[in-house]
Length: 154
Image (cartoon, rainbow, N blue to C red; front, side, top):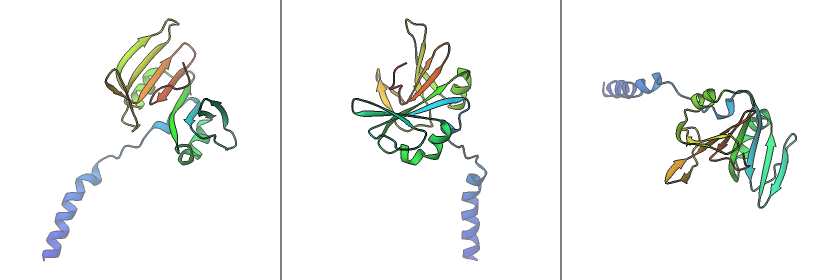
């Protein structure tokens, strides 16, 4: 009888968590990504990856499908990464990534830069005493989303 009561208590405790919707990380399921760039101390020797060295870092550019297929390898020694979008409404990106916008700046060239936080990326930096893990640059032709910030320039 004690085992039955214990079993019922365990099930009663676990049942609410079984009904809870488990949210998946949407970062690498984004739509309309033209290119991905992984910034790393390593040059990625993978077909379809174009690497450019600047200082001590490599900027490794590839398609989203190559990024997804090699994600575990690319994450090693990664300093950050970026998505390049064409024709993607900024509202879609902000909504899908659940971005909390902390600051918006308009540059002289008309480009808007947003700094914020998303729950889908763990690393962060501090900007003006605020924790930031995402930066978005919006121009007429392109949207660049950088994690934790854009490291290749706007």
